[in-house]
Amino acid sequence: MEKGLTLDEKTVICTLPKYIIMHLFTVVGTVMEKSDDSTVIRRPQFAGSFYPNDPNILRRDVEKLLEQNALPPVEGCIRAMIAPHAGYKYSGAVAAAGYGQLADRSVKTVVLVAPSHRYFAGVSVYPGDAYQTPLGAISVDLDIINTLAAPDVGIERSTRGHGEEHSLEVQLPFLQVALGEFKLAPVVIGEQRPNVCRELGKRLMPLLDDEHTVLIASSDLSHMHPYEEAQVLDRRIVDRVERFDIEGFETDWITGASEACGGGPILATWTAAHEHGADKSKVLMYRNSGDITGDHSAVVGYLSAVFYKDN
Image (tube, rainbow, N blue to C red):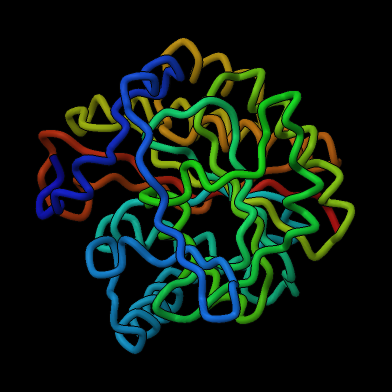
């Protein structure tokens, strides 16, 4: 395990990308509350462990990460992005390299697609009113939620996978600081079968008709391999992304030649971006936990990258 991981962080690590491994996990209850006006809000569950729970400290830390990891802007229209979802002390710099690309792009809506580290069938699109972090509540775009829902192909309006799942929640403070006001469409994939993910991608694609909408895939890369072995596994994904080789990525992920616990979200969002005309990609940053802690015995890989097309 990474040095300093909390018990909660240890219990949610997904060690293999193969979708069948997800069946080993059990479904847990959701953590939703109704406010006095009957608004359904998903409360933060990982503030204080994966990231600070004090709003002032959280904002300061995210602003610092964005400033320290700022890169030249990608010259094109960003349609989708890959961002890691570990604790900020491990993957915060890599995440910031991606979110900094969105800061000045008039993004109004974010469709955030995350993996569930506990198995459930199909895909869950969150039907509540808001997701909350220590920085405030983010309104859910229920029009998009209703558009995405397709029970006949396993995409359902549901709170399944949204309760005790960190992979979506940890992205939100970065978005709140980088974008300010925006609407959120939270999507969690419980069953990372390639056909399910491709179908989700097809349903995501028309949302990109709105140039102010961006898709985000939440994923870490290989888990708990020695440093050199992890770099070999992760380089396969980095190379596929750099070459915009979606078919090669899918093959590697399915066969286990590479690992990504959010391989399904990557496949879905990349499919949508590609079918909407994105034909370019840029790897912004790759690191693993060993680069941060110095412990190379068992590391986790982190990637930020964007898929875009010319303006």
